Image (cartoon, rainbow over all chains, first blue to last red; front, side, top):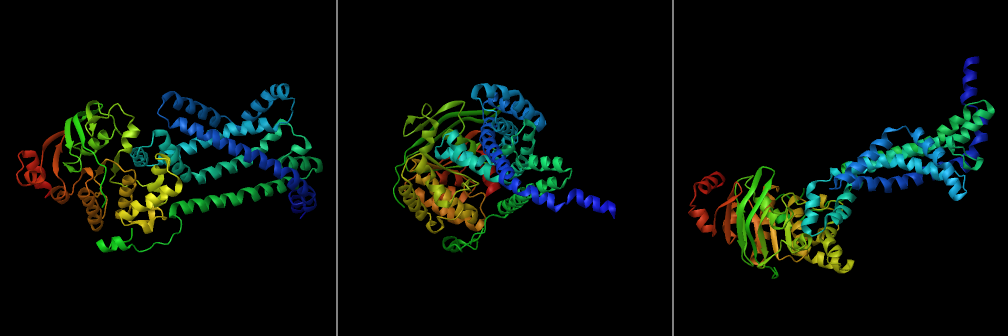
Length: 254
Length: 245
């Protein structure tokens, strides 16, 4: 049973986990959320710009959006983070005097996320029936107003599940920011687990980190399923018999 | 049904091609103020395209469009379309908005009415089509006939001078068609200028003031309904009528 004990000690040393968890909650969790949420929000804004460019009637705009998307979707996250974080670090230091790696880390995550989110939004916008744009234009709305008021809001609704998936990716990818060198107070969940694992020679703190990620991501995956289901079946709404149509025929219900 | 501030509408020598496909080949259509013109013809004859050209959803290659006797080709097309209501075969209600918001959207955003006034006017329009009690549900919860009546209310809310109906009853279950046609007939009686593209020969014959028969992008015959339906002059119209009646 030595081997089993050995494994249990390596992965499930409760004391080692208990030692790291307070720090993870106090320091790691907020930092992970700052990275994921801010790059998620910025990625949505930039992604929407890319999607609008990608569905616009102007060819140069479409090409530009295409090139951007191809690049940032096609390069591994680690490469972008290192190039942006290490490459632009000195410039930022000179300009602002700040050595905080977070802004550049968030920038790198945003650039990548926006490429994916742009594609998600674009597919959503393009899935809206042509008749919607036509009906809106027939009322007298301009192309831009029609997109803003009618087409895009519907497109976004349809891709909410994909968007939540993208946010889950961001939570996980935010762990790569450790490559830019973090002060003790800047560490996110993974780095805290990794440091503790290195210090104790025991992998249990990493298991704690994994559990922490699951606490964040599993509810989100279920949220995806919930939204998906609701979008497919429609919100539960009471249907009333229709008096006017009932006069005409039996087709009171759709 | 109230009176409408409607106007006359004229299309002159309208041409349109998609690539090598010559869809409209010099169409002339005149609709007197307060009258109803129905446009009939086989599928692919260019009827629906004609409507889209007359409100400049598609710009004609050639020809002129006159609203109340004045050419509108140089106007801002968005402003022109505010003056022409359009109802579609597939209803095209905005599914993410409630029924009343569908009707009030253009009032709020284009007419710049305050939200409450827009809602009040929208409710009034919904009342006219008998669906005020459905104001706060979403279109998906309505039957096809109800959706189409909301679409008519949405178009009427902008107080258009002309109404276009593009096969407004073709997507409806048979038992729902009558209600929508009755509403359209009411509008016609109320003095709305209407262009109705339809496969409903009964409506065309009984409600419209003039009938235009189109085939392959040209007007083959037009005139008062009794004349076209009882005494068609051309072989093409005779053939079409014998197919559909």
